[in-house]
Structures are given as structure tokens and as C-alpha cells.
Image (cartoon, rainbow, N blue to C red; front, side, top):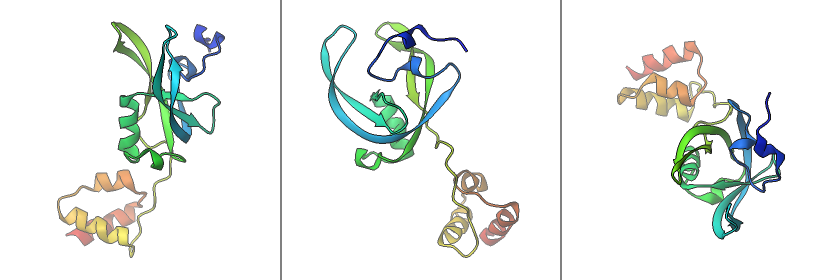
Length: 159
């Protein structure tokens, strides 16, 4: 594994250099806050910053990454602590007239076990109703763990 040159400096915040090429990092949000941050020119500006349980450096959140977290969990930042996100590097992002590598939040739940969908539960009844109103079994499988036997039962119940 090769070492990015930016890893040789003590940056205060996570950046694209923090994630090894082709890899991802799953982190648990500890807190979010606004704080004054010095940009590369030394000028200070107020930024929205996210702290994590697993790493010592926080991440400056831009609108794109906030929208990604919102789509996973909630638009309310008070709901974010304790939630897991996966960050990765997106290459070739246009910023300030250059193409750069950007740290992004993956719009996908990180390795969290899906709840099991079982007959006789409230979720089961809702799934049958959803299917009978032109929902798809694939969308249910994306949200729940469900055995092939129960998939068949679910489809029969929706007819």
C-alpha cells in the first residue's frame, strides 16, 4: 500500500487523503457542531463539523454530505449522533476551477443488519398491504431479511 503525501502532515480534519485508495471507512457520528475553521489561505470561516467515535479527527460537512446523511436518517442533526455512515473518496470533483478528490458520505446503510420480516407481525401486515397496492418484493427484500419460504407466503397473502 502506498502512502499519500498529505498523510505526512498534521491536518486537523479528515480529508480524501484519510481514506486509502479504493477503500471506505464506516464511522459512528458522535456529535455535530459549528466551529471556526481556517482555510488553506489562513482565513477563518464558520463550518459545520462532524465528530466520530472511531477517529480523532472530525470531518467538515458540506451540503452534499449533509444531504446524504439526511437521506439515510433524518434532516434533524439531533437525530444523527449514534448513527453510522460510510465515507469514501470520489475522484474528479470540480471545485474552485480544479478537479480534486473529495470525501463523500455513501448513501447506503453501512453493514447494519436488516430486521427480519416474520408472519404475524405488524410489519408483515404492512408488507402485504404494500404488495397488494403495487409495491415490489425487491423493495421489501432491500429493507428486511426474509426467508424464501416467507417471501412466498408474503406473495400469496398479497394476492
